[in-house]
Image (cartoon, rainbow, N blue to C red):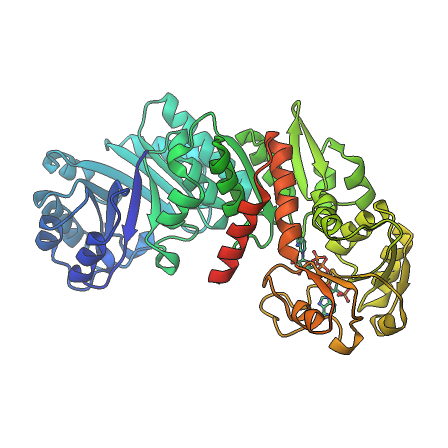
Length: 486
Ligand code: NDP
């Protein structure tokens, strides 16, 4: 398994100092020479600290080099002379010239398409008619149907014993970057950190090594993931991958940015995935893609989890139990009265959970009509948020997104409406300490934050996929630590 960090810098000096500071876990470094203003090839290559791929990407392949074909030939020959370990070259150059002058170096013949995924089988066929050591195809993956084709390409290349690098660019291609090496891709690329990514969708070295634990992925790895839109800032990949590590399980959890479920499930089946977390906006639509539905998910009318059982996709809802567990540790629920603020997805799960536990529920939502619909569907009372001071209750649940990052100075209700002596359970978990919770405490209420539900529903998902339960304390510490960094 090879991980190549793509380095981009304005100057030769900066590039070398960046290379100097890379960790030893890196196998290769790609020098994006087309981005260096004062390119000094001898100095770069004499002082390299890692095996180097020399790349001088021209404008027409999405790079920045504006020089002539002649200049590109000369620069590549110079790179070979000074010890580049790999040349990454495009098809308009004379690859035979480099093959004759390469000595120990290896030639990567690369093709890029930033707009779409072409016919990959055909593209590779065309490329292999020109001798090279490695063939690289990087193209934009607009849908998960395209992404499947990249994995099929790797499979064909493996059968044909060709060295291939196959990368779907864009957010949907993350899985080709993480799973590619275990499926035969010659290498995968990583960005140094954050915004220095050299290609769209490229993960950082830290993510590859420490979130997805790429070095441990092999053909026996159980694949699970998250589908939603957006998923970019989700804590779930960190949480589930760390749980797997803690329990010594060969499992990898990946985020999938999904707009359309149909092509995604083609990929799900192709990769032989074993489960999913499902988040907004797919919790209801996913019901059409499961073979069976757990009775609780059926009652809620939404699934936040899919697990494959005997080859069938089964939909579950762990939000219900995840909501209830921390709450029932804090108070005895039978015969209580609760007010739920909100009428969205999580409010639905909360109402079902409370009713199961014998709690009488009144639903108050900003948009009354939406609140009434949900209350009628589930058999709860309904009202306007302004009616809160007139209600008698033991428990107040915030199931709205008021107070959620970045609207951290919002609260769903005015502080004067909070009733001392009640328990206030805010399901918002980012930030862990919301304005509502602070105000509730100051009014003499007991409080419970949304991180508790978040980690419990995640632990239950993990258990559905693996049969093993990760320690909730560990997950809680992880979430609080990550949210504290934000
Ligand atoms: P939805 O978008 O489905 O519903 C949002 C709800 O919040 C609606 O009822 C909406 O009212 C209401 N709302 C939004 N903004 C305000 C506001 N400023 N004042 C009053 N009401 C408002 O979202 P979800 O139900 O999926 O999620 C709601 C919250 O719960 C989010 O913060 C989410 O992060 C959190 N959550 C926590 C989980 C956990 O594990 N702790 C799990 C899932 C979600 P209206 O109908 O009028 O638009």
